[in-house]
Length: 160
Image 1 (spheres, rainbow, N blue to C red):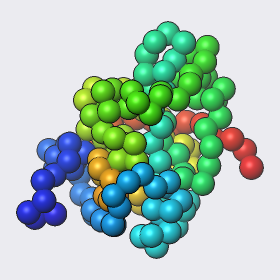
Image 2: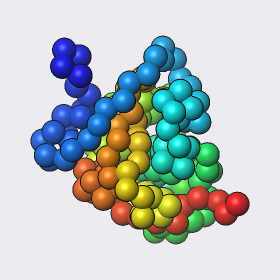
Image 3: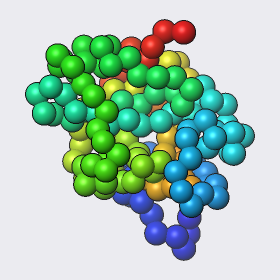
């Protein structure tokens, strides 16, 4: 990452003195998290995606979950203390977060939203999340992710 400009996510991790390992991959347009995990040879259970939602109250929330799982919107609403939450439209992502679809990191958004990381990350040694642009993943501990985004663990995915 020496000559390449750092993303907000990487700058925030540096500022907080959180250790991380950047992983890059070739990507010019959106690819789903499963494909990213496969391209990087990362276990899908350790590779997490970021979904931004809007609650009934109008507040926004961020949910971070394994790429091969789906959000349970009822559990998400309960965690956020809302009647309901819905994913934000793709066209609104950049204005809201400063990131583009496929490059949304839970770290370093324009505004820090209440963030929930799926409980499955709790006992993992490391996870991978977007580094803030297409083609960049960041490897770090789940506790460091929580520290960087002010998040908390919650049960947010559908049961298998």
